[in-house]
Amino acid sequence: LRLLTRYEPESDQETYGIMNILDPVLRTSNSGVVLEAIGCFVALTEHLPELHQQVYDRIKSPLLTLMAGSAGDNFESVYCLLKHAELLVPRCREAFASEYRNFYIRYDEPSPVKHVKVKILAELATETTADEILAELKEYASDAEAELGKNAIRSVGTIAARLRNKSAQGCALLVEFLELEGARYIKAEALLVAKDVLRRYPERRFDILPSLARYLRELDDSAPLGRAAAVWIVGNWGQEITEAPYLLESLIDDYTNESNPDVKLALLCTATRLFFKRPPEMQAMLGRLLQSALEDQSNTDVRDRALFYLRLLRTDIKRAKKVIDAHDPSALIVGAFAENTTGLADRLFEYFNTLAIVFGQTPDQFVNANKRPKDEHVLAKSKRRQLRLERGSVQGIDVIPPEKNKNPQEENLTSTNGFTDPFSNSNAQTVDDLLGNDDHEEEEQQQSSKKDLEFDLLGGGAGTDFSSPPPALPSLIAAAGTIDPNTFQTKWTSISIESTTTLNLPKLPSSTKAVDAALASQHIYTMASGELPAQFKFFFYARDTNGTLYLVQCLIDKATTIANLTTKIDGQNGDATLVRDILHIGLTS
Picture 1: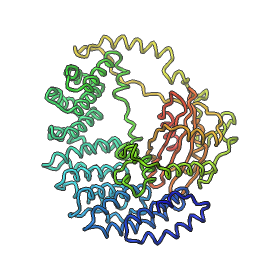
Picture 2 (picture 1 turned 180 degrees about the vertical axis):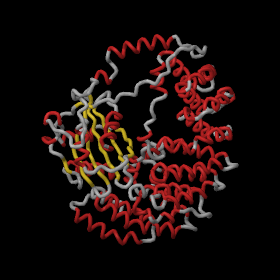
Picture 3 (picture 1 turned 60 degrees about the vertical axis):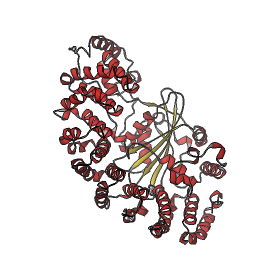
Picture 4 (picture 1 turned 45 degrees about the vertical axis):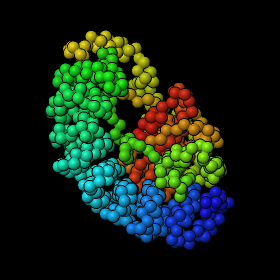
């Protein structure tokens, strides 16, 4: 079976024949053989997305049967099976969603098994099952084992962040955890999770803010991360909390007794941000805090952060606000939370039924280089994938001929979606204006800098203008010219450095053509696009004003409306956020 994963069928019919032969193997009682057979099914159908749902439905029953049969006397096998299920579930959530009760924990199970089940439950939750799963996780949160309780609270946050319609129920449950008497680790973990959920859904803050002062007072040195999360929430919405400055005052006055650097860094950031929003109340407090932090020799990061803030404030208040109190791009933050592990999961599938799945790491991360065998089958699989893409055998993707992929300005095309050309004469600002290079702004900044240099933070000087700075202006992508598919493929495979991120879309695109037209008006062009049963798939390219070329793969999951972006940059000074932000606008329009 391991040898079979290295074989490349010559046709789809041969692939079907091999899977029919392997089907009886899934019914064996040997978990190692079943897992290897599942790995073969996954490898054989890698380039056949239309079969993925059938394959996942087929492998579900053998996997659950083995888990049930091994429970009670062979928890080691159960743990290995669960780790493989944890890897499979994000790819086939619909197949396992109805079987969520199989992942409820049992009292006699060891801790590692319980922890994996709690994580899988968070991934399996749907709009119809989320309420029942949240109720189950609520019971786990009060478990005698502290780590299991923390994992359950984190899973509540994952469900709230992943399912927008269940965010209210998730936040209500977090408030219940915060109201619990006794175990402070539950309050601390609930605050940590609440912080990330509020970044995702700021409108839910009114569930947390009214009692935040009490939560902060109830936490002690045994829960530093929870205190740091509470301080961060104060800084982010301090203008809506009447007593916000006075919540920080006791922490500032007790700074010398604080030993945790995370709390110190959060306090520095929050006090400075609150200073921009409520300067009369915070000026003296911030001065005392900066002075204490500058004299603090216990942590270099804290001292350097304080020095950085002080120099920014003395140089230019407006620019300091842009840097320190910048807008939190909560719409671009997903999961637990903003950490994208899609690339790692794809690599782990290449090592199915090995210790790599159990450890959650590729072999190069836990095996010494001189002890590793040559991963010839992995290299061969990568080469096969590249050859399939080159000969256009990836089904569901239509390559757009180069002659049709022209600059919309040259063809005088008008987008039916109502998008306007950002370089047209109707735009009042030039590229130089957007980059902040116009003479008028430079003169104004020099006058502001002279005025702000007279402001003595530690001495409590007055007269500084604390008006809000203008919003950051977006950067534009210049016309990219024409790139043929072969050039795109060559550059994509030759560029090893990539940036991955995810976007949470409010709705699915109506069609691939609508996306192509919308992004073309923003100078992001489509090399290939297609609609698969479970997702939309796009390959984009663009070029910025410095000539840097951006290549982007975009996968939009139809079930979750989450777009996974992989960006590769051909140039020295590229910034993936330029393309990401414009893609987010185009995909949500």
